[in-house]
Image (tube, rainbow, N blue to C red; front, top):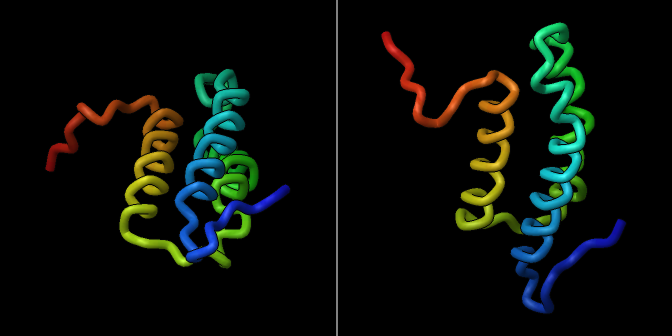
Length: 94
């Protein structure tokens, strides 16, 4: 795998590439996420090493800004909601 950084150290391109690659991995596993036969704990055990590791590959080297976090977090939360079968429109009641 390669890494994308600008001469100024900006890693916007790298974040975009990582989100795209992790999204592709997540999509390939859509039958697993939708399966009623597979429990949430197993889905989590698959999500973390397959999707999150793809998303965060070499992230320890990134000078992450607030703007980049605003791209990483929504992708992660969108995938989590998808695994749970929830929509962003669903409200949590007390």
